[in-house]
Image (tube, rainbow, N blue to C red; front, side):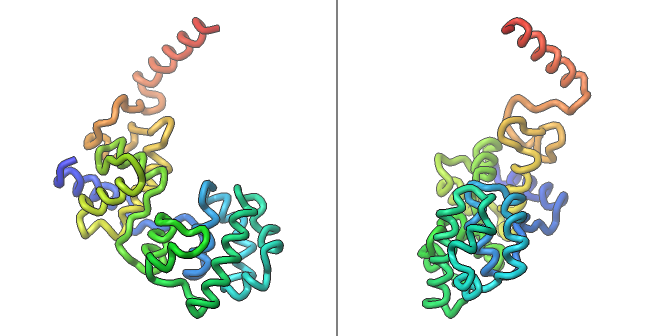
Amino acid sequence: MKPAAVAEFYSRLRAQNPNPETELKYVNPYTLLVAVVLSAQATDVGVNKATGPLFAKVDTPEKMLALGEQGLRGYIKTIGLFNAKAKNVIALSKILVEQHGSHVPRSREDLEKLPGVGRKTANVVLNVAFGEDTIAVDTHIFRIGNRTGLAPGKDPFAVEAKLEKVTPPEFKRHAHHWLILHGRYVCKARVPECWRCVVADLCPYKPKTPAPGSTQAVKAKAARKKANKKKA
């Protein structure tokens, strides 16, 4: 994608949502860190349901250590991989108390040393908690980077590197939120809703999904029914 098209791509996403925010609920940098660790292979909605009651009582690493691993499991048992995540949250809380004065470090290197924290999690914390221009590549951004041609890459790190290179400075602060939300609600994995995509004309992806109720959609539905009858 050429620089002018990249700028236009982001401009349209910004026009839709000038100040995007993470959909994870949190109280402070510490609870944000915990929420992001818990969100691995889980939905934000599912994490928020579990952390609402948790963060009402536990909002510091000291309180988390007092709650303990077993107590934490009781709050997050509806989240996938909760046993391993509980262990990591308790372990990282202990490190924060012992090595960082109970504060979340503002260093990528220090963040990535914490149990359960990888590059994506570190990028989210640096961006959301500390306002740094980092781009956290999740499955949505990886898909959009490749599908649209905005930042093609074979792995998340390659897509991140390309996004860092092609994204104009004025868009970097919110880039990953615009892309995540676009991927979550419009440029979906199985059935992208191209008919309501504000950057569809900038995207090489084919075929474009027709608008519900349109002549094209009705014909496509009829064709699917016909094909299914033949299979039966």
